Image 1: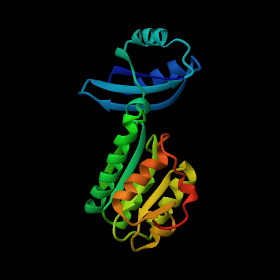
Image 2 (image 1 turned 30 degrees about the horizontal axis):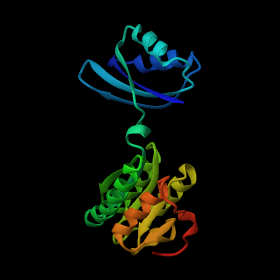
Image 3 (image 1 turned 45 degrees about the vertical axis):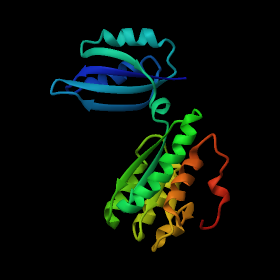
Length: 216
């Protein structure tokens, strides 16, 4: 079972190390963390924890640490936001892919799924390569959709990397450039590409992207 907590802590060097050391000494595994500064004095620290024997006891003990102002239990990111679809590329194409993805995600989320859609309108080979690689550092990403008219060059190296290292599926619009040769699925219609992206990760859909070996 995965538990999640949010702590309001004093924002100064060494606090995160102190907290993680305290948690690790209890043989609790930290599987995800996110930190952001609330003000010059305080930071919010979100942790997802595995192998917690008693979450109430842990929160009480964390509250006794001087640098901790408050501890609250939280739903996990997966329970709130679920699996993620990332769409990046040209603004017009991105918006059309998002239309299909959001419409399809709504259909599955009503039935109990949790699927969210993120968009990044972006142009330029280097910028796209950097963005594709960065997808590997994001949590819960199931599918990356590349939406544009022309993509290739070093972008394909980033695609191969996130597919091999992180198991992320890549859907591409049918465009000029070598990206289409490295995608798991090539779709001509942008709205349909969004639909296919959601169907790829949805538990309530019967669709296997690995069984499709042609352009749609």
